[in-house]
Image (cartoon, rainbow, N blue to C red; front, side):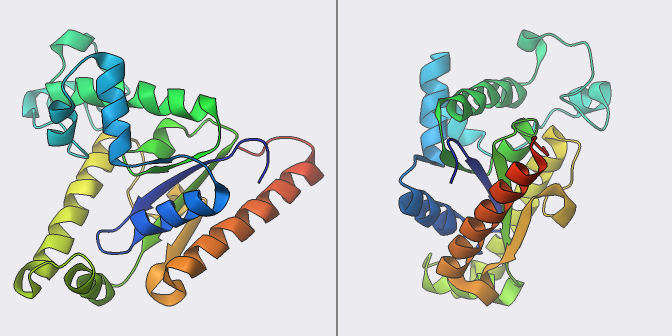
Length: 217
């Protein structure tokens, strides 16, 4: 790994994406941010961490605001910060925290539109971890200890929430391969295999940048 690499990991529910991120951070000896990010955002803003937890990866529920801002709510519109719905204010605060984290050094960030927020960062490697529904349901039952009768529904609903959040706050589509540098099926590679593929990609990517002599972000 070079002087600084920021890894962002999007993931389907039950794909093990969070574990991939934690293992990657452990292998590299760099900070790992998932719920930790919410605590930092709360500290930076002086707001309650509970507010960030309640709004975590959930889009604004304001229909009028959505209509006023159009299909890409955060990119256009004339409403001031204090006029925005709370979830949108929290997203902007969280975005500043993500950018601040990325400036400090290498790290792994889970979800929360971090790949989009850092899209212009030349040190970014964005990853999406996915798996077939049956594999994710199996993990939900046997690893997350979710009731077998509810596991499939929980997987589907969580994915829908994450997709709505990502699609609302970005001009990209959640889970679409062209949105990310690397898309991996954890049911085929396993957790360790995904980590190895990310490390290999990093090595090849850095060699390619050196050969080109300039950033390709």
